[in-house]
Image 1 (cartoon, rainbow, N blue to C red):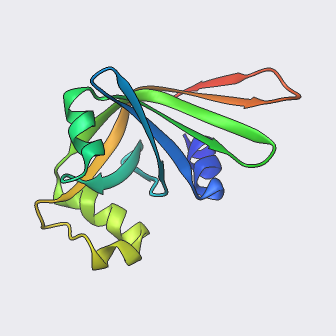
Image 2 (tube, one colour):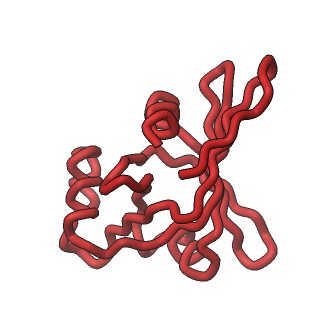
Image 3 (cartoon, rainbow, N blue to C red):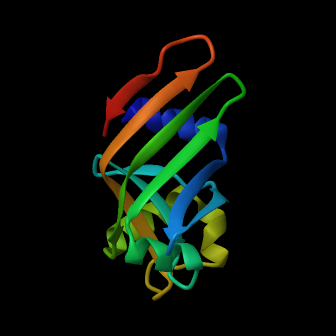
Length: 130
């Protein structure tokens, strides 16, 4: 878990893929944290990405550091607890201008049944279960 988190955190930006009906959707994200042993991301409930994940929680993220990349696939599960929202916003204080742990928009989600695959052009892929 720590290795996956560190890789994503060091990349700064990763790309989150969801589905919208039969259409794949990919967009850049930057929020990532480990809370209570689970890998979390953050978004807003008013965004299309939130609606897509509630309709189909299967998602994948991908990040590249210039030499290697990671893909994390699993289900993203909403966590409505104030403690989880507060933790994420403490990791990204600049988001407090747009989000609050007490509002009805802030959404944090954690990966369930996730698998991370580390890859590069020079080495065989390596899989980590989260």
